[in-house]
Length: 61
Image (cartoon, rainbow, N blue to C red; front, side):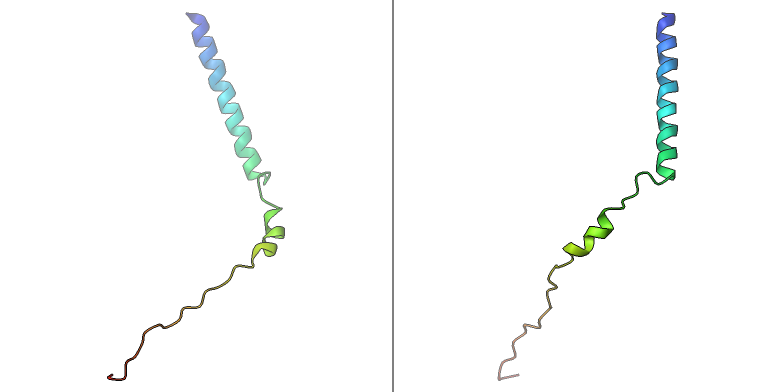
């Protein structure tokens, strides 16, 4: 039964260690996206649809 307590303690320590390493990596900018902004200008060819006023006026107005 004491093995379970040791395994739970070790797993919690490993989990907390990986979480702290992950937070340190995120704060240091390791996951910042450096590639997409340089490529984004190549894909900005979207057509802008103009809104047209399609109301029809009749001669009786």
